[in-house]
Image (cartoon, rainbow, N blue to C red; front, side, top):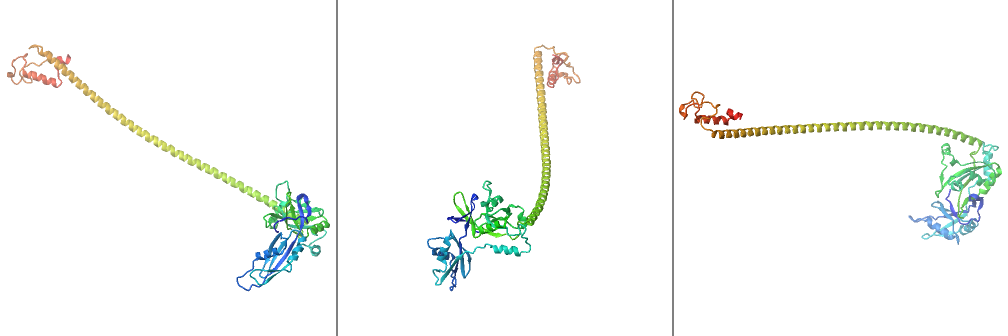
Length: 444
């Protein structure tokens, strides 16, 4: 279907359902053909845009609502033009039909032919003959006789519930719009059935040239007269929507009678059975997906549990490793401390031994000093004593073996046991130097 166009003149609009802003507007289209001359010079061509501009200039004080190229060949260019209302069609045809165009750079003249657009719409003879000749149709049954209209290219937004806020078409709105022509027995919007595309293999979501979502619908009338009135009203018309702001847009729709028994009882029952099968299949798929999802969840839970166990095991090993490392470090520190303690103890023992040795040395020196002092004191005290007062413990100066004067009596100036000879005095001094003291000195 063509894109929706803005409508400036709504004087010819016919009410369809004013509550939803829907009207019917006559199709005011024409076909314009421009015969092209034979191009004699190679590389030279005729501009379609220039021809279109010349056609627009041939219409005096008027302009096309839309003008587009429908077909272009080497022999002719065919345009489809549309105007605002039906009264302008004759004026445009008078300005265009039989006229000529002279293009710059071409000596030949282009002939123009214009005529009203031939609408592709079924007639009463078409559906009567079809249902009469069809062998698989029973005119006594609904859906197998001329009672159903097939509509294509209906804008979804125009047939949506206003209060719902959705742009999906509504069967209730469709019934309200088309019940003007007679009582409606049944309607069907295939795009609202989620299983229809899978049942038929068709895509019911179609877009127009302007990017708006369109849909197709089936409207079945209870009486033949309703069908006739609807087909007669829709013949040569396009659908127009007028908003609350007064702006109007229109779009072409395709209208035909249903020849596929779409709304017959057998077709409806068949679709219901197929829908039930698809619903059952969908339930099975959902159950299968649910089981797969549960299995995946269990698997993921098992994997998470396994990962948690592995993480715990790694954490345990890491802690064990840290514990062993800390234990080894403590043992090294303990050994180091023990070695340091032993070294300190050895050093203390050595210092103690050294101190003891020094003390013993000091004691020895003190003893020697004391002995020396006592000796000196004894010597000084004896020096004050007269001859013959040598202590009785001194060995007698008797000549003989082992005595101080054993060599010869001649060394003694005063022979006798009480004499003091030089030899004896020297012997006494030697004994004192070696640590031996007379009995008197040792005791007193």
